[in-house]
Length: 396
Image 1 (cartoon, rainbow, N blue to C red):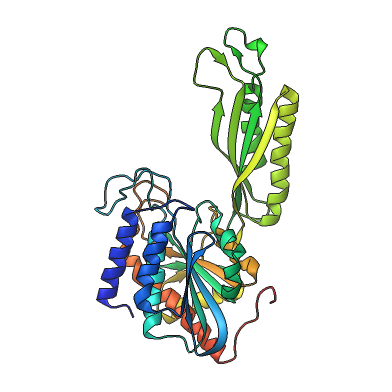
Image 2 (tube, helix red, strand yellow; image 1 turned 120 degrees about the vertical axis):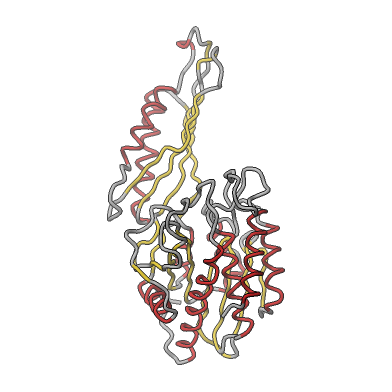
């Protein structure tokens, strides 16, 4: 159990990182702060520079057994935080408005618990992952040659969720987070004087047609089989000048589906619409893909472990109302063969939503997060020592 001095230290660490956020792919100082905070806990191994600025701390038992990985994120968001907490961000237009600073503090709390009672068998890997917000981090970690030696049998993550009762856990088997990807469409024509627009080739008609056509591909609706949502997030036409008829346009859209398989035809249809408009209006076309998130699907056996840990720790548990439309790159760890699941941890009702400019994580949630993670680890490694290890979901 965390001591009062643990809670004070973890809260101070969290608030310091909240003051000094770093964006995806730039988490060098945050990673260094993690390594420094891990040192007194005496992990058997610390792997830094994993998939960029990722850090993994390994606590090993005396005998072989399953490897259980717990994951937190390091990166912040490119949003200006509103005045409010005394520990608000000191970096302009960057802030921890998703709670990743606290997720990392929770993992550091688990490290403190493991330092006092090390595993009897198996291993615990505490992964502090970079670049979750742009979908690049998990894939980069998995592609890193150093990850092969850390590959888990079980993988768990949590995400705080404002709007749910403080400390309540929610998880269900099956779809947990949607797949999503960003599509950037560039249309090239030819500028002209605004008094003689016919001398140029304007992409304005194509841009105007594409926005409703793309949105119609993914109208949203109930989160079930076949769910598709296309959201226009940014559009630009020509230069901000009254004397120039435009010769350039750019359109950003986010494609979202419940499962990975449905994303393939949605990508094809979206590009097909852009190609048709470019052809029809005599425009050059370029497309590029960004922020690619795989769907996150919770393994039933892993969810059973979450439910059991909640019961054992008397943590309130409920089934989620539906999968999250938001994406999470944690789903990629299931593709390594691990039994993986993410659970939501209620951050309190009546709080600002994630990514809002006035969101701040409640430090009172650090303790419940540590309790859940530590119980998951203890139960799974005890099962491994007793010879009850579950097989991998997808083979070795």
